[in-house]
Image: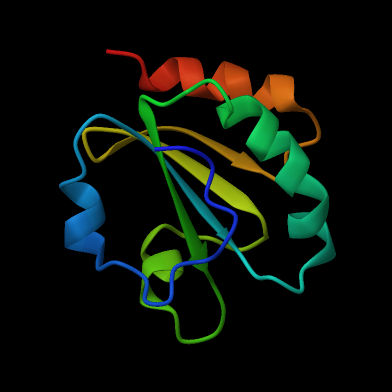
Length: 108
């Protein structure tokens, strides 16, 4: 699944995220967040040749349970999962290379 440019209309439940098979990047942020906007080209670049990685883009904020269940405090936060288990986490990534390196943690 390629880079997702839009946030999901409805975030998945935590148990659904925990059951996701294979490699997944869950991105928490908002459309209006400057840090999130700045990170988008980096995330897109890191995921451009990674059809094996699912990208789930979740709008976070007050009252959003999924972000709280992952302990998200700053945006964007990227949570890297392998078969629903967290393998790495990046907060406000500065380079595509950081993201690519974290993606290595999702390899089987």
